[in-house]
Length: 169
Image 1 (cartoon, rainbow, N blue to C red):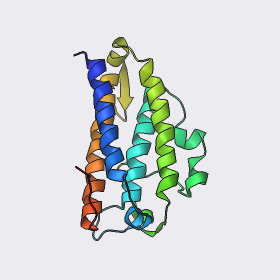
Image 2: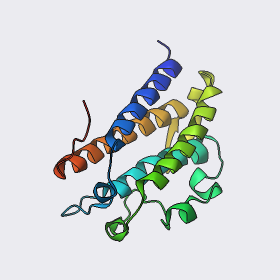
Image 3: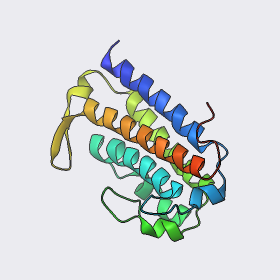
């Protein structure tokens, strides 16, 4: 199997997992503030989606993020997406609608699909920068898939702590 086909299959599998974790989520579960330093599902889900947005739109295509270009801050009531190493405590006080953020996810997935439909195996070798780290486009895409799966696991665990089924499998 070629690497491009592998990445496309992994993206499809990741999306299925993310969809399963978000299936039947309630507003209460989405906004529940867990004890300690754990993040809410809402913060984790926005981060999961906004990282893909940043990687695909910003790093790989040099375009504005869907979040900014389509005005998702206004649509969701979230001032800014939670970044790596930042304090996400504001999410413990927000009451967000999962449906709004699922719409943002659809918009991000649409631009990802458009980008990946035109991607060639040669494009995967292109060097990009993630912060101060140089990597290939293939490595960045694999990292995006991996981080989404990791956060889907967090969401599933947070649903489980609340007495809901995290993954319906």
